[in-house]
Image (cartoon, rainbow, N blue to C red; front, side, top):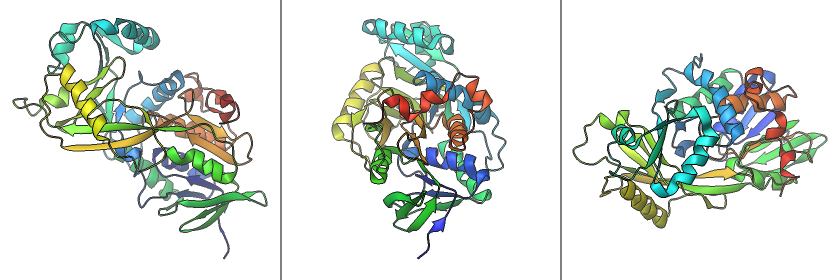
Length: 379
């Protein structure tokens, strides 16, 4: 049977794969393949959906800033309502966390503003009196409509003639006569370029192809959805900010009238369909009840997702040094949704051998910051 031939094959239809495929769609025949029955089943569909330019390593913050114009004015026929809803993030510290707060203030600079404990209490009335010694606010933070963003990219790709294939887990990947041949559970495909956007499985895909790994470590993060305390006005959570412990030991975020809480865990994991561990849920509840006047009586929903990191916690977007036509788009950590508009355009430009887009370069992003070479040849 003859191979289905494309110019570029993107492996993984989560936010990373869908967005770069859409940005590449005008450059040839594009195939986006997904192992699961629907795109976005894993990390994309389990995101806490928070946008903040004060979150992540410097290159992520730069990519996030460059993503703001798209988020605020997407100019897409596939986006029917705003992608962002203003939320704000309140960073809090106890007396014994003063050093951590000083470091964060120094790192973030003008991206945040200091506020006093009384103002913090007024912003989030559920905080236990006396818990907060120092606080600062990121006023630019917002909730992201993750599904709407993901659907924009999938629809844009298909409108430009791109093809999406689900139930297409990769079973073999290798070079044949200068092209990559990708064998999947739903067919065999061929292209000059393969973009590895397989999330937690990206190193596994590389190993299958005989490409050096980049040392990707998937880490499990737990989330729990609870009701607000009795007596809270129905509209109150809608105006509360998200609250993040300065040492990232927990966060709480209003979510459609309920409260999303997390212990901000980062437990190394093999690539898998991540599930919450009871111990992590218990730790989460204990940390939240310590900082907030909340008694968790019932859990509405609990889940876990994998956030994948390389050693320096910055994303990898660039061709593999040891494999022509094999392009990495991996290691976005917990920042892949908020940075997707700028990272996808940057990755698409690099796939095509072009310069970093001017607006992204103006934020200080250079190709070496994203390239696999910085990792010393893989792991």
